[in-house]
Image 1 (cartoon, one colour):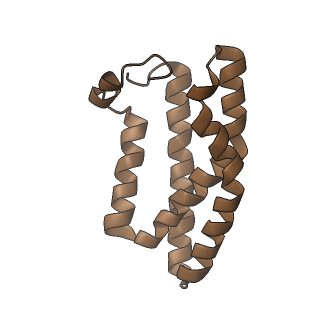
Image 2 (tube, rainbow, N blue to C red):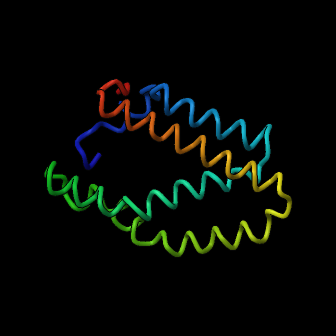
Length: 130
């Protein structure tokens, strides 16, 4: 809403193929493959956010003229994610006991990195659906 997009349009829109694949993959991992592997998702999300969220927020403000309140979540999340990564480490150490679980977690993270790359390619090419 703060970016000038009607929330109703967003709710009614279809996800891009890459986004749909990412969501479907996460449901598959959690429901069929190995629920512990979802910690690979947390690794990707928290890690990318820690590395890039604050930078993306600043770039959006500087280059696109986006207001502070439109990128508040990104900016804050990027700064908070070091602690989230420490929490994730503790979760992995507490719950991932078998080599197979660790292998599934790593595989999930690798697939998710690939799917995020696809999402970024769609955005750059202007092929992501609105």
